[in-house]
Image 1 (cartoon, rainbow, N blue to C red):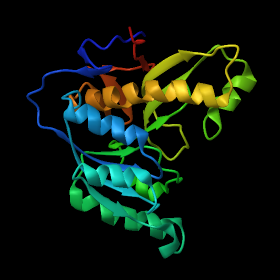
Image 2 (cartoon, helix red, strand yellow):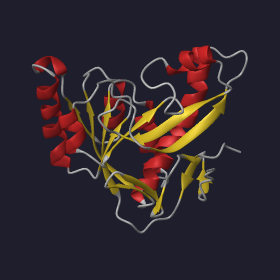
Image 3 (tube, rainbow, N blue to C red):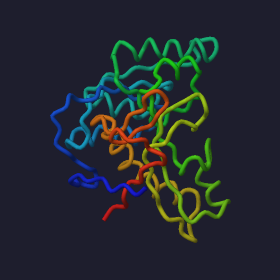
Image 4 (tube, rainbow, N blue to C red):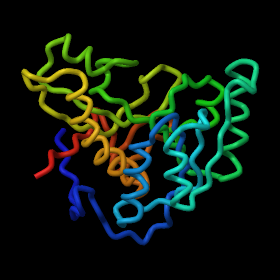
Length: 235
């Protein structure tokens, strides 16, 4: 299925008028938060009907925290070293998130493997962006693995999170060509530009109720979605 998002473009990000209440979200990061920045910018430009309640990180030095704070968004740090084990940490993370009552928890470069307890607590309202065309190249080092495999097309995917690492249902992807002269860094840089289009578009689909994951069934416009939608290439 080819999905050309039928909305007006605004500086490379899709925009649509909406009378719906903003989707309340909390974003989890570990580093510079470039995808976080794309979400904030899309929201400010009217391309994403969301209310970003907080940004939470496992690393106090994460640059994305400073960016969020400058935008008057609450920031919280939950450091793993303060807790004994993953279960205790994830319970603390839940306790940091829940006061904001998010409708969606967004992973944006959050570099931790989440426990089943955490995943079940946010079942159906936890999403992630992954730098490959899932189900290919789950896990780390996706760009080098794509090059090693000799693929001609690479990309990124947005999916709901399940207990399986990078294994939840994918609903929106974007593709880029792999050039003969590419190496891992150039491929990563070009794909990141498309991730900054992909994530706001994906979350906007959820904000509008067009994408839903109900009773383990992924739906687009209330119709079963058998394969991921494809975000069209920029013109």
